[in-house]
Image 1 (cartoon, rainbow, N blue to C red):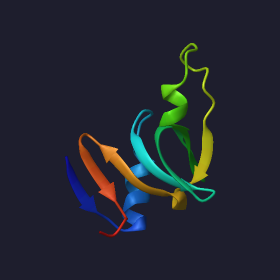
Image 2 (cartoon, rainbow, N blue to C red):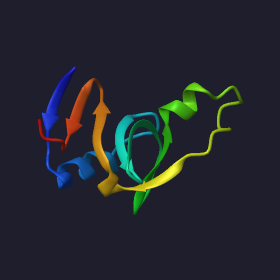
Image 3 (cartoon, helix red, strand yellow):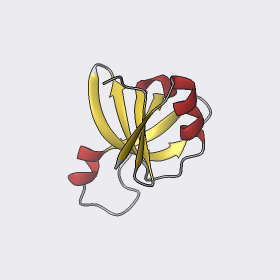
Length: 88
């Protein structure tokens, strides 16, 4: 897996083209966690934290995601490439 460092603007452009299921790294309310995209919207991205998915035993679509603003997303993984705005 390769990592490509991008600016916040470049990362947002990648996010706008994402499909459901892509992995993202989110920092929201002081917590950093991995999540999967549920829906990309105009003002933010609706994500499902991976811990919620791991512990879900219901039917597909039963887990409700949370909407986070674009600025709260630090990485997105697309086809094995991680686009990151985190500095080493």
